[in-house]
Image 1: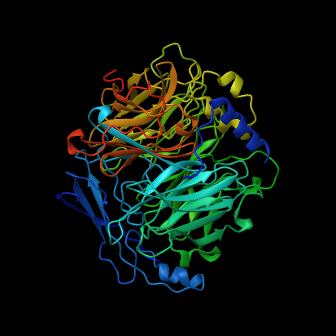
Image 2 (image 1 turned 90 degrees about the vertical axis):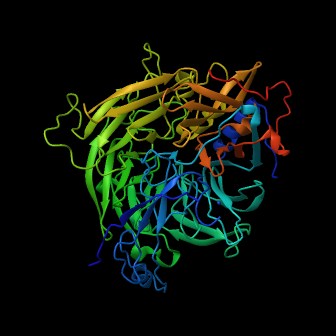
Image 3 (image 1 turned 45 degrees about the horizontal axis):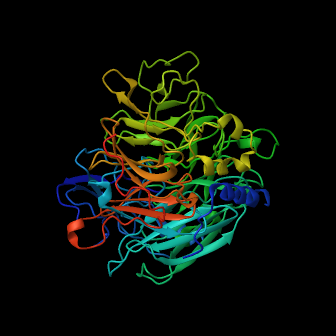
Length: 612
């Protein structure tokens, strides 16, 4: 039997160290999209000036064993008919001063952002600094791509200090892109026609410690890497295309959706029809013999009856337990290195409900883990499917002794529910399709309820994503951002603030703990033009700090993409047709400062609205 040991934490204080440009009128872009669907930094550490580190090292590491779980991957590779050597891995956890960062994952790239929602806790918050200063002292760069890059992952530096940014697109043709982190120049791409079977397969991905980019697409796990070893500026190579055996899936229409990296070195995934699986991240140990799965639908698979479905990514804790939300309930699936089992299942309000722009029924959020210290109350946080959506905190470990359900009929695992009205006391219906942003006990939710929801929600499900092409328009854009906090003394939650000025129509927000800023891709009418923007909000007060206009083009629509804190005080986002980078600049440096990429609309202000 394999021995499992948790790594010890040694605290230390130290400095951390063109493709065709799609500039279509909105109406033409919408029509084109609907027609298509109808047809079928040095070293391995991110730039983190001024942050301290937590060293994660092996606890009595045994020769030939991997840290953080003690998995002997050489034996697993032998089951696949391959040979490989094991390695001992360590990693550094950067700290923004709040001591709220989860322990680093030694099997992920040790970069600014290396997984969906940044890490396996899926918190979407970062210890790295965000953009500060005046908006006119910010540069905007854009790389055009044929497709929507939802998640961006940053590589570690190679021996010459070169770095790359990886992404994958979704649609009728799925493409993996690799661009230069500094210039945004194209380094390589691989396109594959895939059948996503009506799911968001291919949207979520990760970058592992070997600098391999891993994405679940259709019914396969695909592994990509540098075409030349130790050259981040080389092209893209397909290293592995592992097809999940049909007998491990739930029906012929099943497809991979969520993905995360477990701290023990296994990739965890969830499929549209509720199969949860794990397989080693190493390509030589990735095969049918080492794949372990569990079906949340069990005997219902293939019965023709209704199934619990997955439309979001997944999360994992430091013990490699996996958190999956379906259209009906929140699950914790425990992994002990050999087998998967259901630890608990908790239903939530509004199961099965949907709306305009929804990618699935029920909850619209990836489960987010809260509580990074052993003394913390520990939760999994989601938004439910209620008509007036709630932020829901669920006890992720044992339910406290004597705990009673918060309302009649509520599962006792629910610690609190807070209705989200985004500061409108008369609101009777709200919707959030994005992952909940978490830092400490704070949870931030963005409004995705389109004003034209009654009409747009009548469109068939396969067209719902394309309603987001209208989400930045005057009269349709949703408004509102809200923060909820848990009080460990009273064991209750309450709303901390609401911002009714913000419209972040469809992108996932992020947060810099170093600069206490939330960032999101917004939409505003500026000088009569509906314009996409980067906006910053104070995490403590909820007040808008600044707005940086980008362009009015549909190609700058964030289209479900994750706003991302990058290295060097930069903020990135995928867009409908590419990747956009925002970064601070110094006008006294003699270098270009105030650049606005691809912006021919001269009357758009370079200086944005301040202090609103």
